Amino acid sequence: MAEEPKSTPDPAAEAPKKKSSALLIIVGALVVLLGGAGAAWYFLHHSKPAEAASVEKTPEFVVHLDTFTVNLADPEESHFLRISMDLGLGHPPKDAGEKGAGDFPTARARDAILSVLAVGKADVLMTPEGKAQLKHDLIQALQESVPDSDVRAVYFTEFLVQR
Image 1 (cartoon, rainbow, N blue to C red):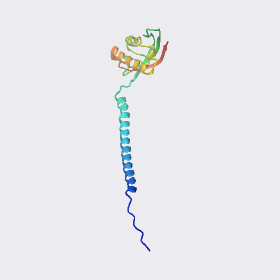
Image 2 (cartoon, one colour; image 1 turned 180 degrees about the vertical axis):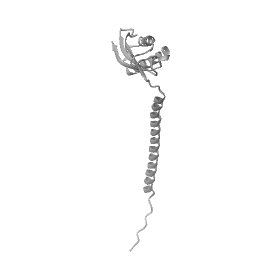
Image 3 (cartoon, helix red, strand yellow; image 1 turned 90 degrees about the vertical axis):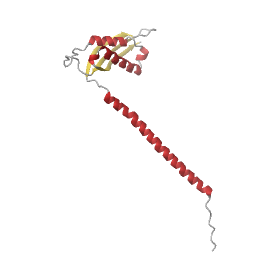
Image 4 (tube, helix red, strand yellow; image 1 turned 120 degrees about the vertical axis):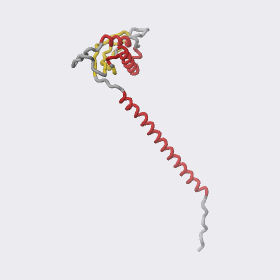
């Protein structure tokens, strides 16, 4: 019997195998790098609120204020705001009973609140961002006007913009 001639390996046939294995290694490396970058982003961005919450002072006591009705600063039309709110305090008002406001300086607090509310505009106050900014402005004004009361939060219990 005649021996079959041995075939020599075809270089063109081995080239696709080498290219596909190199491509597979590159794709694998990219997946690992992107996965690591995604995990790092997730942990960096989700750990910040936890740190901020631990540093942020939480209110321990609440003082209820009567309803405010104020004309807004809209030059083209007459709009008004009716709002009720509670203030979150860091410590109880001096000589506070179980349900009383004690020596909370209500007049100074209401004056500071009215000065912030009166410069508001209806279009801005109707947005969630506008309400959040109003809370921030109220807290800042109360901390400046009534620093001994340690106002930490404002809770809207009624919020009506009449247009």
